[in-house]
Length: 135
Image (cartoon, rainbow, N blue to C red; front, side):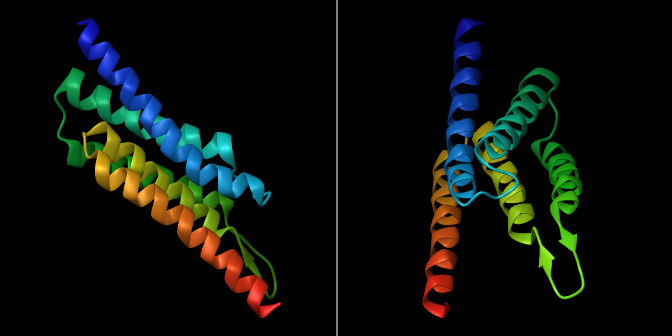
């Protein structure tokens, strides 16, 4: 029992850390969903996955479908449109992919989860570099 609890705790910490990597970049650039939000989304996705699969024997694909749908609604709430400008699409995308990272950790797919978090961080940094070159 304690081994299971220790493994679940480790998964939550890993998911939180990976979500934090993405959230750190968003926080540094003062975006609406920052460090805490991304950490919580990733950890929450991991928690729902671990509990659903290990405690209730649910199919991980069904859990994933619920998480993807739910995070889609949260992400949609971050998108704001005005006359000539749309804001928040990147934030919505980072929340969505961070949920995927947490889900991956929850089903023991660690290497792709780590690679995805790093790639999101890199993509966000490249965008900053591109904007500096244009300006």
